Length: 475
Image (cartoon, rainbow, N blue to C red; front, side, top):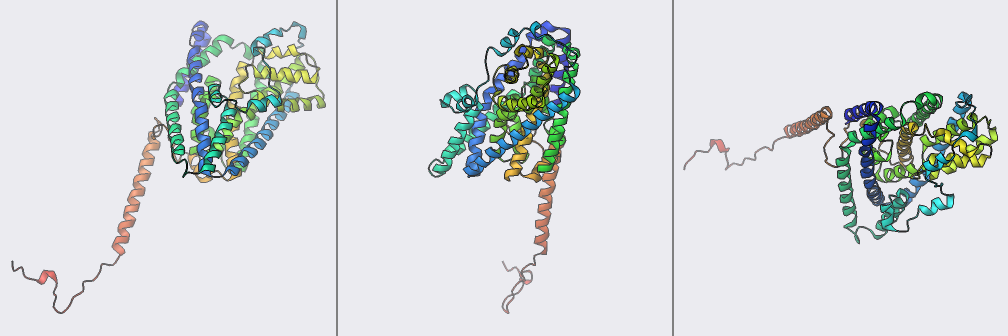
């Protein structure tokens, strides 16, 4: 699938560049794929979390995983913000633009955000609590689904397997059905990447690369620096290699880049993390929660974007004001998930908190926002996966030996919907069969060797008995 998605990405760029009108017509291919995948996320998260809590048998351990995940998220987000601010101060991407804020169309930002606003802290917490069990799934609210899953898992632990013996098997069977449906949808991934890429290039063109080249370059450079820091942290905490993990999940990363959405690969990432040695309850809690609390890529974009806007309109932010930027973005970035135009809302809230940047200056980033999607999506996705490994290791929920074997390719990834390795992995399948056959042969040889070494019982002869071969056949 990796080659198919890569080819679809390249073809999408050419179609969008040469025939923009055709590119607009194929946009539904990408949008439809994203909708289908999103339809499976809520039931999948519910099943994985409930099964994980029930199998672990310890609700306190689940609470510890959640607390450690929040600590990791806050540290990672803060590091991303600080690295972005340091780079923005060193490179100063907005210098020399000398933009007059009065010439900017502030209404364009309202059109982008739909007139919405980021929720306050109390509203965010309240909205995380479901007011309807069906509504949480219908609205695809992951935090509400997580709360419901935790309550159901706790109830199953409290009642015990003797009172509700059929519930857990039913949930596990439903999980298998969801994974099977996801497997069917994933076959459409190349079409989705083609449609989304063609639309992006056709609508926005490649002109923004020259207009905002310095800003784009610094954001992607900061993203690489942050990923290097993530790799060091992953190696220090778990002993695993981030590069090997990227190679292990290259299909999912390319699909996320092509569709500009990390949600499209959440179901498959959950499978790969589980097969890489992470316990079910850790995967089920940390990964979905990270989609709301651990937006590292967005944090880089927001910190660099804030300095870019200030420099473009001729405002030099003091150290105290930049500390305020970090504090405000630490709060506003937590409520961004699922809000249309959330990046512009967060930037507008930051500008209002500082009081020295005109709110209309946020419109400067309208032309470059979509080009930043690839950076935000990739960093957000890898940041959340690293968080799963780190928290799992911290809680003792990581099989490190299996993780190393899986990431090095010694153990092939097996999609859970069909029980067979992925197509194209012939070498891995043949290797597995050869190892299994050798293991069976070795086991048989060992058993035969033991049988050969075992002394045969000696015949007991009496005075009235003779060996069978010396007895004449009288019949």
